[in-house]
Image 1 (cartoon, helix red, strand yellow):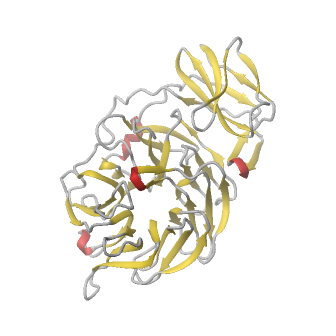
Image 2 (cartoon, rainbow, N blue to C red; image 1 turned 45 degrees about the vertical axis):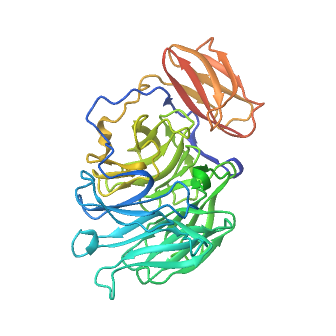
Length: 466
């Protein structure tokens, strides 16, 4: 079929569509009855948010955490070590007051033991004697004298949200000033010294992903824990690209409704990004054009990060904003479609803040009070099934300006249109025939979903109104 590309920056609806695209989702999901996929692991904290993980082999890994309130000078940011692949309790070996650690990256050294490995944990710190918030890198560099382990403070009234190291010398940190202007710092000496490469007014850098020494991507304004344990959800965000090793950054994509929470590129052309409001977009041309992914999960939910494995499987993490469920999504087709890989609505870990994979099988999902663990790649082969495998539906044209035609699945009873927050904005109307013609002229331009209720799980189709 002929393929058409549409890029509407103002509403961040970027669609790469076939003339009549077959797009369907399952709203009702049944628990997986196959082998267990994710467990809560053994490391645990009573009140902290685990924010990131890095592994040096199948047994040795580090987790970082911080308070729900980054302004609380009485809280302790921690680095927690496991030598059992998160099957044992682990050990907290770094816990200064007033510290909030938000990300970590690292490389194995002469041995995979964390003390012999290179790692960089980043965040910020405020203390009773120094109440100005300072950006900090907690660094371990084996064989470095006089001490391999040290705190590197890089400035005042600023903080870090993310870190990405290309090797043991060259790396980047992203974050912002306390006034809300984004920043990216670079090191070429293993984190001993840092230099700011660029600033991003009003855009907090949330994630960074470098493909090689020259090509890198960053996203801004991902959700964040703020004062008094509230969730900050910015109403805008950007996707950036550098082709000169961080010397300069160009804006690829702008959202005027939600910030971006994650970025992952498998190679120089294939990448995915996540948004706070639960949307995922993919590119197959290095970020010049983006198309929305289909997701087998009903909104609303919040996405926090995205990552990939050597075999190409992609994972995204998140949670229900009302704290009713932890969410992990997976994709085996380069991010075009996503299924629910893990969902937990009880106990600890109901807010997943990040996701990390050491290899195709071993993964960690840092969360509230615990870190989820999988030893079989989330068991993607038998992940939570798509209950709509045979419940096909069509919606066309898409994008549309005034009317759309819907080919309804068997047993359809009614349909309605919802926005990206899950709110009904039109309908419901009864389904009276196999072909339904729907007037959408009253809708504002933007991204929506058409929900079709039926006998069994509902079906949801993406809809772009121009």
